[in-house]
Image 1: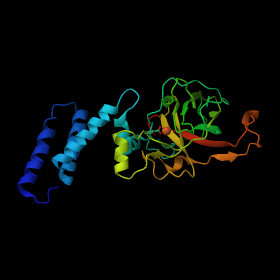
Image 2: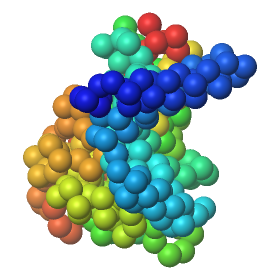
Image 3: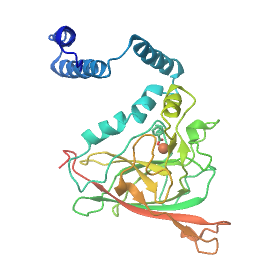
Image 4: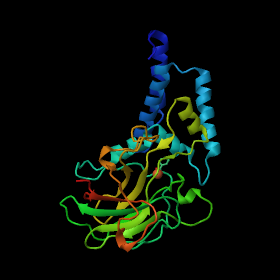
Length: 294
Ligand code: BEZ
Ligand code: FE
């Protein structure tokens, strides 16, 4: 706030009040959102005593984000991600039940139309990286297996790219499963690797200007939905990853960091598979809570 007080303080407060009043006729929720947005935005401008040059630099930044955004690249979501706004939205909307598996960001690389896979299948389909056997148990809060859950999985290869970022249309290291009565999902995928978020635009320049890492720690994405349960959007992170404490998008929850075991080529792999090099395995339980969040 203007520590000088007096004339400017009164003008600044009157302006905020006038803008808030301008929303009086809006739908109640829109009015609530816009009034709070303007109140916080004005408070920010007043707190930092924003100069016209700084205001203009901010407008230029947003314009650059608009210019680089297209059907495949969404710089505004990336901006929301690196400012922690995406993760804060996930946090305020998470089921308030501590038994529920924790949620994290969806990210930009979810794609509709993933192939349906059966338990035991290899979903890597040519994505580069070390084979990784994954076993998931989908349970309710009472520990019962959830039948008929749709489990979407997607992950980057060890080139740091998702299938949708590579040329060609092949969906690789991406699939969906439906659980049977045992609530289990098992598949061969790729050991997750750390990768940089797209950093060749204004968001990348913001990270560089603030000395921040553009890296996301190694993770695999999941979207689990089942009738009667709150949908779960989450990741599993690889324990020991060097970027766990500096995730560019603040998506790490300690409860989502799991061990990926390394196995030698001489160890028998699930499904009687013979693998030339080392392979990995991971298992984890997801707990879904009722759709009312209770
Ligand atoms: C991801 O994990 O896929 C992701 C999330 C936020 C920004 C960029 C990538
Ligand atoms: Fe990701």
